Length: 280
Image (cartoon, rainbow, N blue to C red; front, side):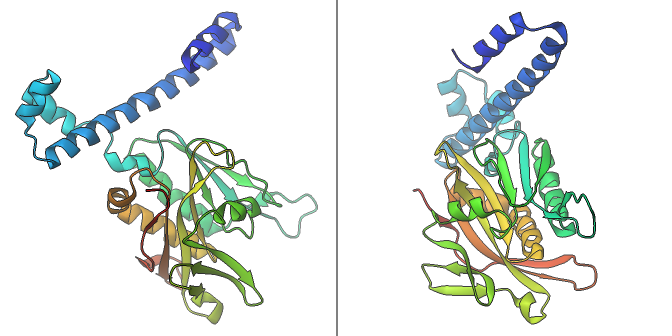
């Protein structure tokens, strides 16, 4: 029995309020599925055109008019949408306890919230909704979820640090001088310039495997919070180019960012490593 059959069976047994609520959930999931199918079809047609097929030829092979093929090539979600996920995105952001309070709540930095806002706007451009949760110390986060995006360094989210060990190319490290990033292939260590008073940082961005082995999650993390914001800007500015290289495979890259010391706004981002693809 698939998801929809199970959902219908539950609806028959449920009370009216539950039925009304559940129908909304099922319809939202169905819309996500429809959008993903439209994206896959659009990308397939674009690939065929790139291989030399004409719209007229495709129309004959698919039983559609040339005009319909042209419409499908420009309608539906853009292919690179898949770099973010296949439906509504859920963000998990590592938090810290409020200081100076008897019963503190977990809070996130202004930079982490700004990173979420950058990516939420990007998702909105692809007709995807977003929501976020704050993961309180000690950073126990559920990674076995579809369409998950995680923001924050492994310092606050140690379980993510364990998953980073599966990346053979890039990763975080920690020593007597603090946290750093490393390109294992180049044997290159990157320590944050902000530790020396500069207005710059480094960050990791890519897809990591879920612990249950049933998918991946998108991960962005700077050595410091400004790096996480820089990674969000990098992804937003380069999503099409990144997708052309990695499609839906596991991948990772290191980026650098520079920012204004007063406004804390990012003014430059660039890749400092190749975009590594883990599963080809």
